[in-house]
Length: 426
Picture 1 (tube, rainbow, N blue to C red):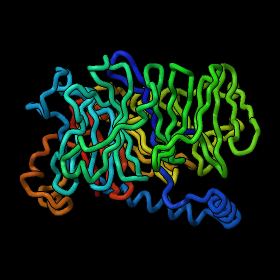
Picture 2: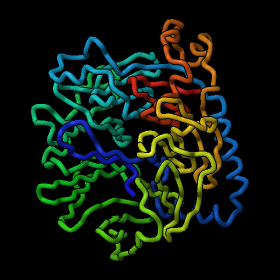
Picture 3: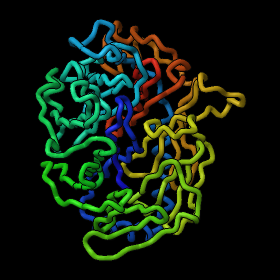
Picture 4: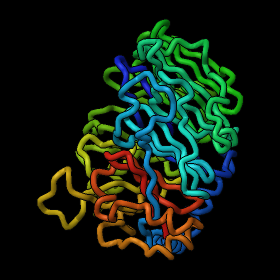
């Protein structure tokens, strides 16, 4: 499946369809060599490697503590806004990390960038007073952030994409970017979807029922598909490119490079509310009624999770992160000790192994806050900056609305309904 996120041109304004982020598998561009390595690992006993991987994961997350707090809300206003709701404090709906910068998008449409070096807000990404940002995507191919927005001047009816290099944002110049896909009519029910795994962008123009695929490296169009009977198209990769085309009764897997169709009936198991394709293991990760499960292509259950009950029944996919090796899933879950729990109470951040279903670690209210000197020594910030953290651990774990794991820094970032972003690190 497309391992990125899809943004719809919703009308009126504030909403966008979002899917789970399975980070790009770094350093493996050759599908054939990748498959050979998989066969080698299968022939040679993989149990010692798997045991080491589990132990390593447990150590990585064992001492995670609440280390820093950022605020996406600016009571003074970051520019001469013309939209009153941009001034309101709203929940964080999306978090993306790139290098030493954390991007946090609030439901109001305001997106703030924070520096992990100085622990201060750098700037807001809204380049226009009437811009409402719906989603953002970090493009590793050219070290830039793509924002997807709607504008009051356009009656919030059409998606507009803009690419801004990280170096410009670090300098506090978010308006130095340039527009993308200007030739496309992305009005509702049109959409744009970014595929980090395959380095592609999929757009749909409802005006002419046209799907187009663009290259993320240089944004050139690769090919287009026009078919009014097609209800859904996804891109996957395993030795070659595939299109997943959904009709009303079946899911068709069509190989792009070589003609062929594989048909999978949807009567084998209940339709999940969300799912992603785990291309490394040729499996599907599904979400339904707060539960997570792993299935193979034959519709057979491969993994059920022992302690990974999701906090929300609507499966808010921004509260879940899958590592680039596709071996771990990190989610905001129901705290195991809460027999009588309510949405207002705090949950826990659970880290589980995808292939075994075992819970390897969790962050809950028992994880203590660090002392000022510990915080300062680990983040390089001043005591004044550390003392600005207002939330307790229990408060930071209440009603988490967005979650992201920075694999390079080994830090978890969470956002809540108050517009606050919290850093969890060891």
